[in-house]
Length: 449
Image 1: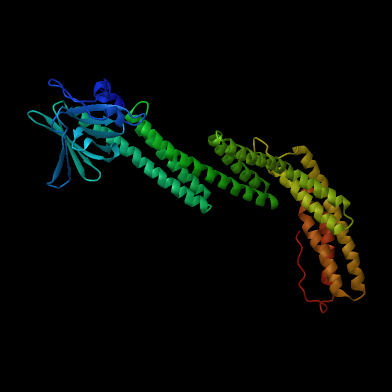
Image 2: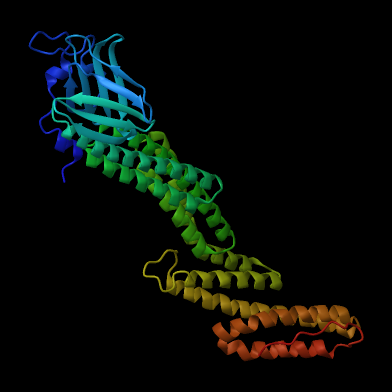
């Protein structure tokens, strides 16, 4: 189906009627007195259908009222009804007030009626503010009535969509201020769908669009673009905060995902704001920062494991060494598991090298914890032999706890040491139970096999 304006304007509008002024003669009607009809048109406004009368002019009345006002043209002049792509324009030449005009935007056209008479026809337009305009004419008014009816419906559809889009943008702003960014973006998407629908209605008016409708849509689209930018930047900043919190907790996969969401939001914002140099520079700066952080994050699991392993090698205190080795082992195992089952790796580190590091650190951890336990037991024995059972128990408990934590590591990663670690743990437990119970009533924890 052809667009409405293209269907009703195939032959164009009489240019002499649009551009003429002055009184008519005996055999011809005139035009307007002061300015031609074309002077009433806005830039880019397209005339579609023109009708005129020489004597009747136009009648205006309120809906339901018996009173009416008739405005008629002066002798030799005419009254014109011009339907454009945006409105109905009625101009009456040389009235007692000079040239007289009234405009009805197509969005305000509620009802269009048509009646045929013996000598002339008449169309009646009822407006949104309950005014009625009666315009008689000897020419065929069917195209005028059909056009006004069809075009007004499309214009109303455009405005309704734009109203819904404006409401959605306001809701998006409210949600963004409340840091409900996902809901805010959903509202932005709703607004974008509404303006897309408005565009489709505009194209139903004219194949190339209607300048006035396009301008209204573009203003709303600019509001949407601003709201979209605010929401995307807000959501990206929030995602970065979450990424940094996950990173601090050693939750690397969650941190990576959060940075990815921030990166996607900045990319989207840049794709629709690249034409604004100032905004584009700001977004590129933020995007570069995210990419640097992601690169550092992808190195972090192995780097933190290596740092902890290095600190363990420098520690003189066996307890501190064991703690650093346990942390290094956890980080190496995390690095090994992060991309398990994924087709594409996200985090740095050679899998075989990490496995080798896990084996090395696990063996060092078992050795350090056994040496630490032996050291604490010797000190506990000294206190026990001196009758200081509470102090002895504290030393034995240190040894026992260290060995209990080491048993699972030995069982899983250094199986050849499992029995020795378990026997060591049982021996410490027997020492604990052998202490004089009257000295300290704290229950002794049971070990695990």
